Image (cartoon, rainbow, N blue to C red; front, side, top):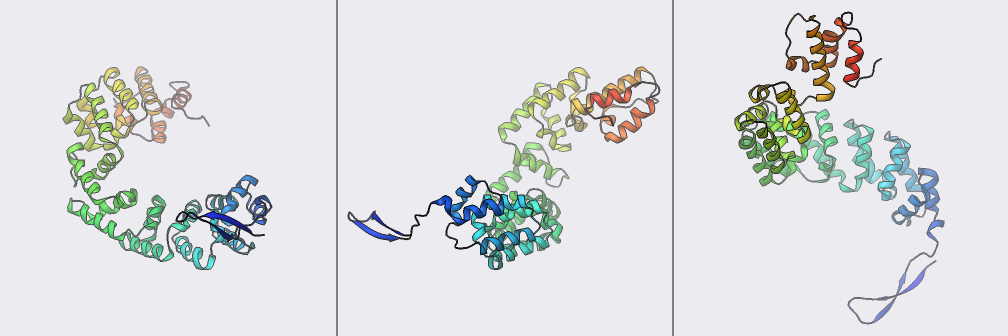
Length: 366
């Protein structure tokens, strides 16, 4: 059924009678409501909310073909429902002209179903031709589909833009700043969005790494330093540097630590303070020692350092250790290696040592 609508045009003071093809059929009676509920698993409210995107459909032929295609791609019913709930208009899309060309290539790359689901949700954001061009560009840069797969999983929205020019510009900029092709490729694999930023921002960020953290571009830790500068604001870095200074560290000692293991600065302020208090105030370690043994600052105090320190103390008291092991070397061991070397061999001499250690470290006893 249709109706006449009286509408006042903004450009005129006179009202005009316009014939609009508005249906007066109640929305809850639309055949697509029942379809969304019975075929996809929507609630009645979800179906009514999605109806504005699909109410123009005259039959279920196109939605049926879309659902069939999505399931052929290996997506389960829950994933299909989530896709349609996120973007109902996908049910109005041509499988042959739109969906299949886009996602056949992505399937060839071996993307797992969760990432295919994410890309289906974004299916209106990039064309088939652009997708093909972008994937081929990544293949040229990275050399294999496994690496292309990783980049797409980390930054699916890259497929939405014609990024070849910007990515090429970023590549040349980083080379100009002393980074090798291998390091730039690593950045692309770990943090692809970084290379799509404004060139001025990228150059300014790269140039901060050495003066702020003391890490030159040729250092193996430069990329770790770059990640720190990208992820932490200047005020946050200043605050963390201030924590070290409050424990008597010199700036030169902070930079020695940062050069060796930049990710020490990723720890929260509370955890940094707790670690420094434990190692310096309780164990008497100096800033110079911790700066050259920075891994101690990234280990969990509660689950790793303190339980292992407790085991060492017990074994030393029992005088069953043949060597004087440092806490740093013991903390660096894998869990399996530590239990094998420092717990299991001494169960006979120290009853319940294994149980006490696993409880203190938060492990379940099997």
